[in-house]
Amino acid sequence: MAEQLYPFRFKPVYKDYVWGGDRIIRRYGRSEPPGIYAESWEIADHPDGMSVLENGPLAGLTLHELVQRLGPALLGQGHPAPAFPLILKLIDARERLSVQVHPDEATARRYGGNPKTEMWYVLEADPGAGVYAGLNPGVDRAGLQRALESRNLESVLRFIPLTAGQAVFVPAGRLHAIDAGCLLLEIQQRSNTTYRLYDWNRIGADGRPRALHVEQALRAIRGDDDKPALLLPPPAELHGANERRLVMQAPFFTVEHWRLAGRQSFAAEDDGATFHALFVVAGRLRVEAGRGSEELETGNSCLVPADLGRGAWLPESGPAEVLCVTGP
Image: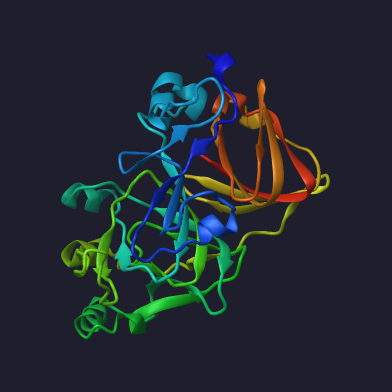
């Protein structure tokens, strides 16, 4: 099986939600017809968006088929999951998204769906743009209910202005909304379960208001959610000419930001322990692993199977920035 392993590239799965724009296509030079590209699911093993491999001898297989075929060789030792556990997606918010919340395990069991914790990495943000994440200090459930009834929910939400390079943590149970003018990379659990609390009186593509899930959303919101949403990474660690920053470490995934000026080897102690999902934030990158290599441009992603955990990243034509996502 090992001779079939190499860095995997997948075809993006696009979503045309009403709030989206075309920044993903323009920013990353993708040859797609004109239209709305609200999201681009880069790496996903989900019925609502299934990645299909586009390179190498296994091209044409879905990510789910790869997981079933390769098992721990893809996911890592100790991760016998029946599906790839994460989704990596690009989000282009031309308009602000609905005020929503994702369930934790208990709420998902009660109402259906799957739990979802996520993190956003800011790729671009227009001046003044940001996100809503959590409630303002002192706002209790009664205050939230009053704001909802008066359609003044914005007054009780905590707004965080953003610039490129920042990151925001959204655990299950945190009320949130992405404001207009943000281009984000979202790293999340394998779930597409969303409870919409409020949608800014928006009319959907079918000419009617989009469905809300008020009861489920109110029950899903955590009352003890008082931790900061904006992540403040520690100082960079130097690895020769390269810099590594731990963006966040959560129970479901770990995210690192690398600024590469030269060759960077994969850490030997991670060999076989977990997959590496890569997204190129800036520059060009060559990923060498096993018997394969893959050239990546800005805005490209790839998945390095766990059994190829020893390899190297090589920036080309100048420095490169890359996000590296690993499993729990």
